[in-house]
Image (cartoon, rainbow, N blue to C red; front, side, top):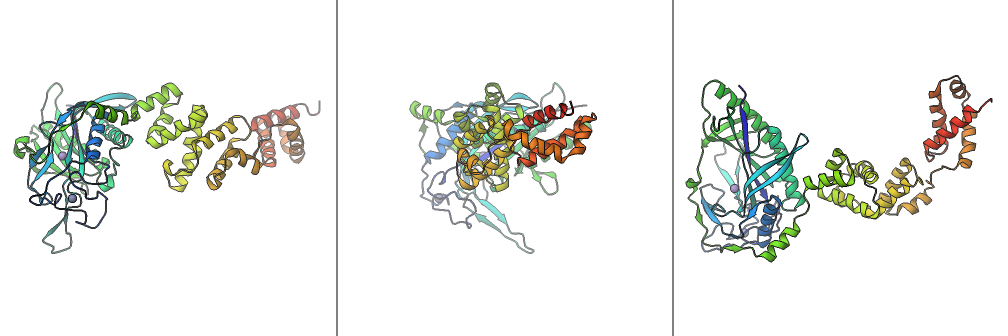
Length: 481
Ligand code: ZN
Ligand code: MN
């Protein structure tokens, strides 16, 4: 029997702020342990939290980007649990009045767009980090509280995903939305983006045939995929064997590639949520809201569709160009100077990206202006330089910072299309290669390739190959007549 897979994802994203959520401590990653702390984030008695406005704004922006209904009057709650990295034994989060609710995001799956519900988006503080000492005989653990009190966005999806592929597309789309709206840097290796998955299997037409299993400790998209695949197999086996799948929380062991039972599932009431008395209620007035709405850029899925529909790009080019906001912005920046969507796309996808890869930089660090790229594409389009010439000019633009017009002249790269200039070279090639001429005239039309190559060598690649070929054919066909 085939079971239906039901997947939901909970995402935690570190927000892009300079300071923590309730205090002025720095959020910089990788500093020595416990050097970015103060009485507030250490949970000292008598210390009081103050809301970081920037963090609040970023959370609102994220909720808008995920099409949520906003609770414009909101408050925070204490979520109680004990863990050594949580100094106050409660986490300040939201439970009764989440910032954003009932939203959705659109994800591309197999060329179609699928809507995945977002149950809620809320703001909370991060906990510190336990560090388990691993040398033999060590019988203690250490705590680093640099991360305690960092602003965290939690995004809870509806269980709308039906396959591992859906989940993968969801994670990638969500990541792009957060990057595009400049809410989080999403650096997974620094823990800025973390996932928890829930998965259950159903017989067709049934709900909750098997219990819902939640999996924690997923530190990469790769881990999410691997654990979902593992769970589908594990739960299928149990159900087919007539056993039940218990509702529980499991931990993913990335090295062994297995999940292990951690505890039976906790419920919201286990956390004894109570409204946080140390923070005021927050109201988002309409002026502030409008400002934040205007701050949310056109998101990748929409932008990609527009590139296809309005600029006539193919799906692949549109995907690559919208993958990163900065690259898409650059592309449109060039179009403002020279509106030739396909040609500009080619130049960026091939020549520019080759330079970025070679120099291991991203588009933000690319030194050539949109205006100069536009001029380069235009020069090539006018036939003044060949595509090979354009590549050389671009290389020099990067090295010297000069504009294409100057470089075409300085490098003598102007293409040779003039018949009077080409005729002597064609004559020279024909004289130099009697064998090819003989073959061509004997019906082996392919032999023209050798002659064409010779002319191109003589012009150092600056001739237009089509023009040369035409002239060669004319000359060869009229020989001996
Ligand atoms: Zn602090
Ligand atoms: Mn959370």
